[in-house]
Length: 589
Image 1: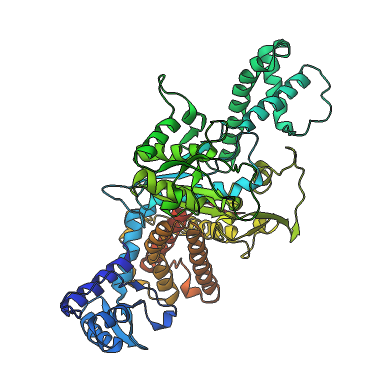
Image 2: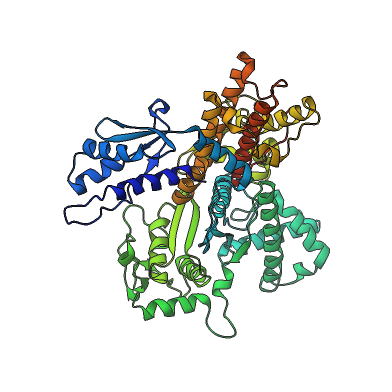
């Protein structure tokens, strides 16, 4: 039950009954008409912009149109008062039965309240993390991992058919470097003093177990082979070990991808025929989107891979990119960009209507080129959405943090998660918009106070569960089943704090829809904090005014209604926390 969508339709129906016409004698477009919560609750339960957006098309003053519309809206039995404010805004107050229906809907639907079931669910691919498989996840990967995972959960809850995907960059020279680094650790495992790790190789201790396993499998036979012989053997095993390490790291954060897509597979020849990149290039040529030409040097600092020569180019600028893009290097091999194009084509051929990329802030220039690829390859049938995650600064009690950096020259994801747990990490990564810088303070995210958002929200859920346990103890024999709670007399919930809580929960479907539409999971975290704040505020009122407490042993009907309210709050909190991938604890000590 989306109460805002419901009342938007009621407003539109009233407008249709007014039989309004624009200057051309046509029925005006009502798509911009919305119903929202007013900024000031004192103005009413809802507000609509209907008169403001329609006045000009139909040639009326906004206030005059608003007065006509108010007459119609006051005929609705669920509207207790419709009034005109200012130049033509309309405020609505609704009957208590409206809020009672909302509460009943939450209890009936449980954690599915606010979700959407679509007959034809859009297929959405969310690709995130996709770090080079050359070592463990580091702190720079955390935010993208959490944002991507929560966004995928959100879109699924909002009715999409979502696939979580990780793109393995396993075709570049960095994999050769990984293999040579692992081979050095293999020699170390054989007893050789390898000294200081040479520049250009990966120095982290995480490769020591890889060297040990190579020794167990091959003994000392690899050192007797030429690099051309041992390199592919070591590369395969080092890659597998790194992917296992990455999966373990992500799992510790509660992130699990359904597909790990290999970049190398794009270069592989299929059944003796061309590779996926070859097929992609043929397809673009047939569309006239590839040509041989030269590119001007980029403005500012010229990148190392720029070449002043004729090369194979994709007409990216025809589709909104800043420049055309090279598909082949001077040695005839394909560019990284060519693999990106072929990868998107593979997504398109898997029938995704939306391809979402979660990237680090250092990939800022990628949005236009990826969107150009999407338009060119899919003819606009697949939307490409790119979201960037700004850097996270680690702090401890307001000071920059210094950690052991056990894995070389970076702080690992596991070090952060092992210290504070996955819940504070996930929630705090989502408690600010993804493109805004974020300070993560180890002390603040673990303190038990209202200043710690993750504690505040989880404590809200735990407090609800505590009330239900207390009720079961204090009211032995009382039927507190879901069925009986749903049948409670909600008309007894008359206090302003109780009605405020129901009103806040009524916003949940609208928040979900808006967050999914804008691809902004942080809106879920913000909403949960607001709902928890309303709950804690009402709880504190009960300390000062005992008649507001949830359990009144002398009034079983009122108690049942209030416990139904508590149960509903816990359902919405649990639903939101599940989207964020954060635990809803039964109790907190």
